[in-house]
Length: 144
Image (cartoon, rainbow, N blue to C red; front, side):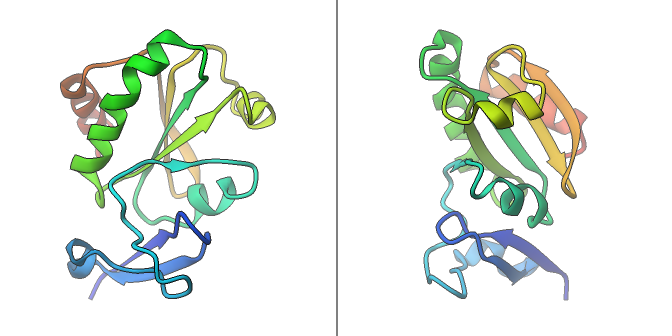
């Protein structure tokens, strides 16, 4: 039996879920919330380490800001991707206006910027808003 580890978006607990049960809407062992929501997790300095490091599936982070027009137009695309591609991939959003230190640490120079993390490390980065089909194609090129 293969085990997938997933971070709860609500309490940041790392949950071990049998991979064949990922489609059964698993709940967090601690807070009992549904782990896979089909929505991006909001990142903060409080939860970023748990989300990036404690998921055995890749994590795609959308670095954005509320004043950014392309970020606003890309938000529904990112949301749709989360609904379609979880649990194969986790989705998270980082508001670089609120979390400026994290944005600086990650070297965000333009937004929107997508960063793909695998096993806690950055493996790919892409700047700019994409249509859903191009986002999926880029993810396939990254082996996701």
